Length: 421
Image 1 (tube, rainbow, N blue to C red):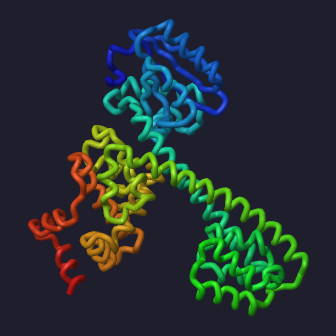
Image 2: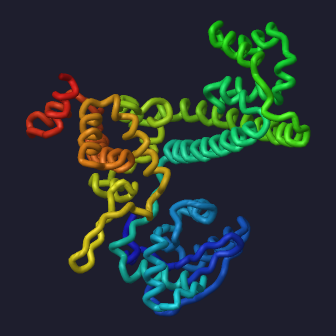
Image 3: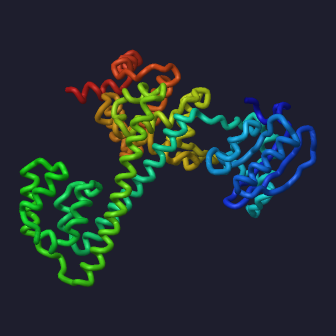
């Protein structure tokens, strides 16, 4: 697929998307005339607009827009005669400021500016080429699973805060508060008064029914229940917070079951993808991070021809700014947050599972770097290693990498030696 300046395009369109309608600026190939219009965000309206353009121009039509995914992108990708060219929203905003210092935003003008950017700087934009259905499905699954996990964390935090108002002991009886055994316990005994009325045999049957096999754990919990003193006897506090706790528990259980379903789908799909083995063998990857790493890299190796491209895209590479004699480094803000989280979270898992990664992390901490800074630096280094493995279709081998460090006389080997001494 060519650049937007290719003569193979019969028309060029700038599109500014919105929830209800999309503003468009159209320029036929070989003409200086531009037409402005709107398209309602309705499937039938988009269909009629697309078919009318194809009937009028034929061939391929280039469309510049600020998105790489979203409803309008999915709608336009149905048509093989549309070629989409994503434009970074920040770039478009800066381009707009050059003509409107007031920073006033106007949708038709944004469509026109998107069109101009695509035509004036064609070498900077590449067409959006979707990955395979399986890879895109995996990408959606792991990202949506993360959203559910974030929901789970919020519910657990709210539930903990609620229980502390009237029933704090139950938080001590269970180490984990995002489990079915904890939530089922609260649904059955939502107050201390109710659980203290339960017979020992009933409590033991409940725990066994939830796969709590340790007699020591069961006995400790039951003794703690029997000894527990109420925080408050105020019915106003207990009644209202009990209702809220039950509501939160019910939401939590729905979320936990949803996460389980996503885990099952991911576990079934990820191993079918060609590069799965490359990431499955990585230290610290596991069933959650392996599919996320696989989705982060994707299958289009030409997309990230160099490791630096992936480091910058993911936001792991820091940004250096200079002005006069001043220079400062800061966190990269414009990046896909989930991809960045994937690399940073996985890098943290490798500290205790990879010899050199642990040594590198300790080296960074010894230099005075906080934990998060050291982990991000480790993620930056890991991406370069994984990129080479990915490009060459070669699984990562820890021993081979340690030998390479030895040949280069890396100072990390001193850290390794001291860790084994």
